[in-house]
Length: 128
Image 1 (cartoon, rainbow, N blue to C red):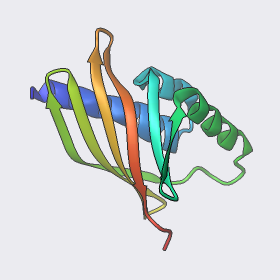
Image 2 (cartoon, rainbow, N blue to C red):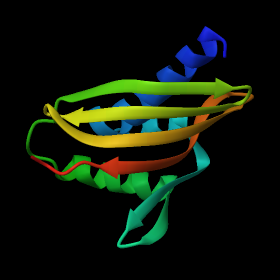
Image 3 (cartoon, rainbow, N blue to C red):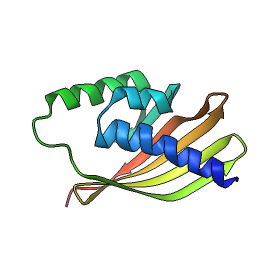
């Protein structure tokens, strides 16, 4: 993959996901980098359910408006960025206030307007 594609994918994930969801809780940032057809697949008690971008953005907005404590310190690591043509997969390790919180697997496609996140699965790590 071209280095420019890898950097473009990382930039979208950093802005829309790391900042939009975790660091800034900003649905506008989310919507800029997630495709409208996005789905997050959640595994709970052996069943998979889907969460749409609208549902997730509403949760983020509600959580941000109810927050009274300072925003958590967010750190992220790209442990894999794999780009083949118009498809990309990212593995991201996310830390909140120094605690390893999520391992995320994000899928992206390149559209005429740029890279967009189209799906996410994840592993939540227990609080220690």
